[in-house]
Image (cartoon, rainbow, N blue to C red):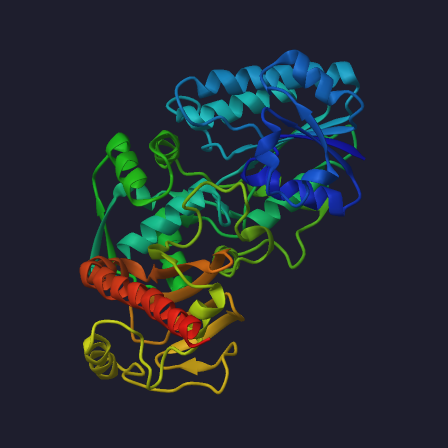
Length: 483
């Protein structure tokens, strides 16, 4: 089958294209800027049509010769997004009909049962796009999904980062009362299964289907389920009779990677209960079958996202900040010594040599760590640096001989700390030393820890980086003089 994907650079589209290619379909993508395909493994395996999804001529050209079209345009950010989506839907309906396309599949949003007035602008726009496509002459399927669970999904990242920020802190957590409304989340893999399956449906199937996982959960239970999988403490949630979507959207934008223009429609939609029609689920299952292993429960979908499993893992086109929170500190020094001289210093760290930092600081750190149940002032060096070996209170995760050493702290911390030591040659007798500390905090306690120790942490690691560079330079000069 020849398939056109409109919106291939988005969250769902970038994961759908490789699935269609693996299934043997020929895929064409319509993109405004082909440069946005950079980094996608599948970019060279598809036909690329440059154009705008709201331009009737561009869409008609892209539809030419196609058997099916998947429409994934969701222009939620900024004013006028509903109008842009409406124009794009009309362009697709007309272009697909003129080109003789045999099937359209559109991914929209779950709608509140029985509500027509007062529906959020975001959900109204999704319904309008679906209605436009169903009113056309090309057989269409409109899939209506709620929160899609997977790394990079804006709604899931909102849940992830709010939970990571709020959980593990106070024993009681005040939440807006709309957090007790229910929604039926769906795993990203199940969404891809539904889209791909609907491409093969008979022409007489011309309708909408709700799609979702096996559970309808309140928003606070989504947070609680995420916390359980991430190993975070779950405080007692207390409903607060507060309806301030703009204020809430500002808070979401401040605490998560979701921009305010995107957060506002998502928060506005939380005022509705968004639960699937059970008959829709049964009808679609009868037509295309269930995903392998059956519909994915919410916590299993979260686990897949945390483990970066398949489509639930990160992708090159995901919004900045998607995925686990990672706090970073980096020190860089240009060194008047070749890379092998710097590497010899890196390779000799630990044990009796120590770490070239402020005297006594890590000894005190070790005492405290030992009291908390960590390895304390453990002094151990392997015969050679190999993955999995212990190096003092670190565990070696990866070694690229002569280039990079990556360590994970085994100290008792409210999160996961890693230290990367890297040297890159910049000339015959010059190099650049890069020392990078990353910390993945666990809940509010992890964030509080990072910012509390940050000033001292910066000083200690700055001394370490400067001294390593200095020792490498001194050793190299001595070696030169000795020749």
